[in-house]
Image (cartoon, rainbow, N blue to C red; front, side, top):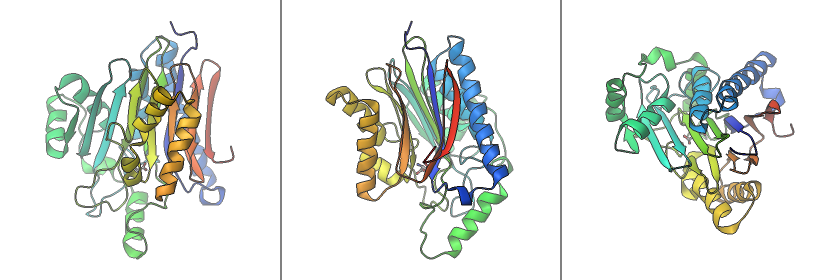
Length: 307
Ligand code: ASP
């Protein structure tokens, strides 16, 4: 058993979260949703369950909540569709699963897990991933499940403005979870609708193992959120784990260094990390990040950078 106990860290996206931009009722609904995700994952970890189960469950709670850009409430592509990406990885055997451009699976993170556990592959895309989902008997929903009026408004706003190619400067809302279980294993999961107005089958960092998600019991588990193109170019999640493993850096030092690199390239966003020794980390270069942490000592959630 792991003497450090269990730990769960989640995010609901990083971006321009500032007090004057968030209505009070919206803010409390977001805090409540983050707390529900922590509660669901904590129940598993406190009962001796696996980090893998905990990150999947926590991500599912956030996927089902329309405030976040994952599952229900995903952002729209330029064509006005919802196309979701997700990935999951466990640190003991470094098994991983991922999907991109899926359009009918209610919980894309669970589809990513099926790819990992029930297919010989790691990464499935679009129609193939949708077909595999049906064959696996996962919950299927119509496009109206994912579509929300607020995300439609954001697409319209993006199309009207000349200086936004896509929504890099808006609130993101991708979801992610990383966990350490009492057996000493780590796992990570990330799920997203991508970026508002994405085109031509664009794939972000979230479903890319090594960029948006990585887990390795030798270093830690990482889930990222932000302007995906920069996170791909920096191979953020693997780079953080590699620094811990090969340079002996702390999780915080490694995460801060890699987020600084993303910033130097012109990108913004953040990561969450949990290490096998129990270190829990948030690192972001945006004004805020929806986030939370749970351990046997309790649960806490935060939104703004100064919390
Ligand atoms: N990283 C995601 C993407 O680029 C977006 C986000 O994190 O909000 O698809």
